[in-house]
Image 1 (tube, rainbow, N blue to C red):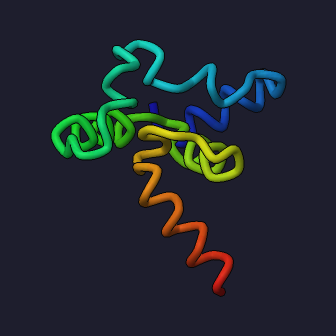
Image 2: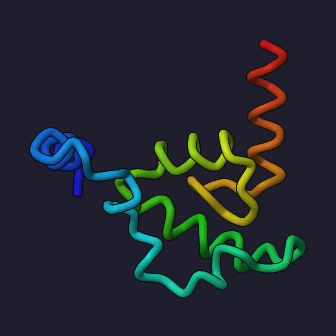
Image 3: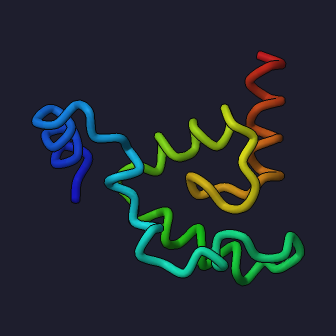
Length: 89
């Protein structure tokens, strides 16, 4: 699915939340909530995110809600760094 396909779907059904289009519900959730020092699981989870049409929306949600695990192709540590950079700007 391309970003244009996703935009078209949302235009047809604006009530549909971004989570309805996420790829991750089809994957074992343990992959996204691995131990913090497990880089292999993080890399695999991030690979899933790269193929997701709503990765940006997911990342924004995770930053806003302080989620743990891999969301939007980032780890919690990476999101904290992004948030601190945004606050410093």
